[in-house]
Length: 298
Ligand SMILES: *[C@@H]1O[C@H](CO)[C@@H](O)[C@H](O)[C@H]1NC(C)=O
Picture 1 (cartoon, protein in one colour):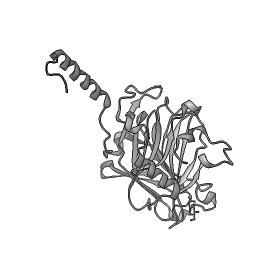
Picture 2: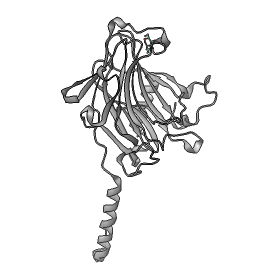
Picture 3: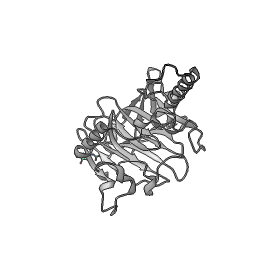
Picture 4: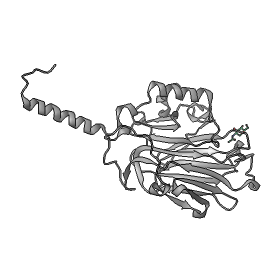
């Protein structure tokens, strides 16, 4: 208990400190709020292959034998939480790839990828993730999903701060990429990224390693999107740091590591749905890549 004769100047000082502390903690994480496409995004190419619904609150990307299409964020961001609700190409989607990713623009670029590899009717999609640092990727992980991603909208999101990059499917972490700078691993931290999505033909590799080709008689292939909310530190493309570094909700203690429930769910994904993880591929990487060493029990 505070002494009842404590001078009032001390009280004021205490209140001041409390106020300052609460000011730096920032607002708690908000559920992504849906906004119209045009608020945060614009088409990248083949503008006529993007269709808009409900005042731009939902869109579709169309792929036919002439072209795919894609869109990108207007702004660039250093850290934050980025999510998209997507409903993937239904039925025969073999040969198609739908991607949702963050990428910086320069030659030694950083990139955080979700890639959905289509399949023949009734066969499962593969979700491939990758992380590029300084222009180098080769960090693939592949999982099957525990639901049919073509039936309903699901949210796919990335949490990116100085400590980790987490890939989420709905609320389930499917991958964590820890900052292991102290162990000699690179980590994306000083190159602002834009958010991109696209749908294209990749039947030279996507489905069963390229064995299954795109059946153009089933075109157009259609992926649907909504949500479009972005919660990041917006920075100019040349910027090397975020002006509010350390002060946003995603920088705070509880987002610097997964909690025990999230680790448990990540383990569930690894045990039940993982097809490939470069961290455990000793043919390709005889010694474990340094950034894998804080992944828990990979
Ligand atoms: C497609 O289905 C086949 C057969 O079930 C499976 O082996 C493959 O992993 C699936 N996904 C892709 C993208 O090839």
